[in-house]
Image (spheres, helix red, strand yellow):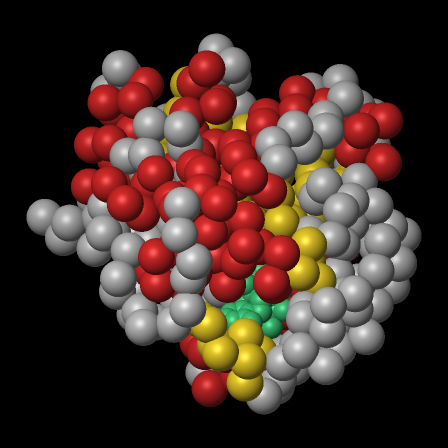
Length: 338
Ligand code: WQD
């Protein structure tokens, strides 16, 4: 299929582009590079050995989006583009609602005008609100921050679109905690500024960009007192998108929801020690107060994806750390600007 990948130069989008091509699909990347560097595309072309068509614009521009759908033959869309920083969303709620919902309105309208029915949507475990232990897809959704609400709302919008237009074939994929990098070490997670997320922060401590890890609380009701999460290798996550896309080609359901996680929880300290094994030395950390809004435990029940997509996460925590470390040590400052 010819697949439009919105946000295709981003962390998960770039890894998914590689696996789409490996699965025999053609890809068109649309990215406004608000949260990605153009260098990523060069690296993707080196890995895939293919020229990758890219259109650099904001999908909220309905004229440019219409022009793209009118002039490009497309079979499906994978929609990654959006803002995703929880803390930033609390400070800038209007930007988050306008950007995340606006891109989806523009994209889905163009899809329907041009008969593109297959949509894989990048959602998040954050829609489970504070009830994230062994989460199953039928749980009610809620959020504790504007970013999370944009995901809850986009899911609802897409469920309503599927009722109005049952020819649509939509997959809502709920990610848990994506980490790791492509085995080449040439692409990976490159957060702007101080990383919010645990794994990139640990990697930056290991490479000497950060002094030490601050562990946000060790008084949670978990085995070692630190937060427990379902870390999933970004390559397994990308494979989940390819599997979901294939399923859309043969399902009669206008909309489906799947958790993409390992089903296993790992604590902050367990992840830190796994990373130390990858680096081969101890890494400095200090336990500090809890981070506002954090929950103790979050991990998926991925059995529906296994049963319906034939998909299961294969990579271990040690794989995730080894691959993340290869990317970070080969790219201490992340991607170059030019
Ligand atoms: C993981 C654990 C922290 C940083 C977030 C978003 C979620 C999704 C994934 C988009 C927690 C602890 C972290 C640090 C720490 N994003 N931690 N020191 O919060 O589970 O999920 O990213 O969809 O929406 O909420 O991920 O990596 O920030 O935190 O101790 O410097 O690591 O307390 O227990 P989180 P995280």
